[in-house]
Amino acid sequence: MGTKVNDAARLAAEAAAKAAKEAAEIYLNSALTSSTPELRAIYSASLIQMVEGHTALTELSLNKGWI
Image (cartoon, rainbow, N blue to C red; front, side, top):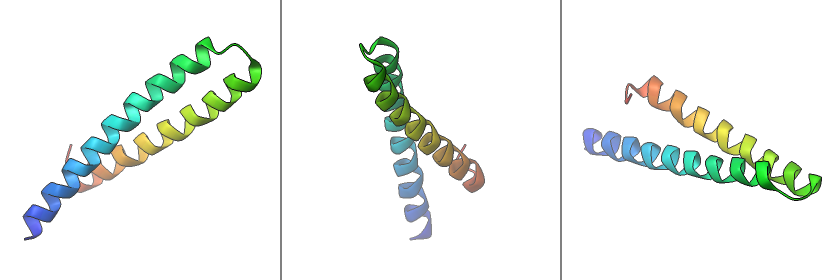
C-alpha cells in the first residue's frame, strides 16, 4: 500500500509542477505584453506565486527522492 501511495503522491507532484510551469509561462507572457502598469503588476505577482509553488514542489520531489 505504501508504494502505491508514494507513486500517487509522486505523480500528483509531477502534475502540479507541470501545471505551475505552464501557468508561470502564461503569466510571464501576460506580464511582458500587458498594456497597463496595473495589469503588469497583477500578472507579475501571480507569476511570483507560480514560481514559488513550483520551487516548493521541486524541493519536495528532491527530498522524497522522486527526481
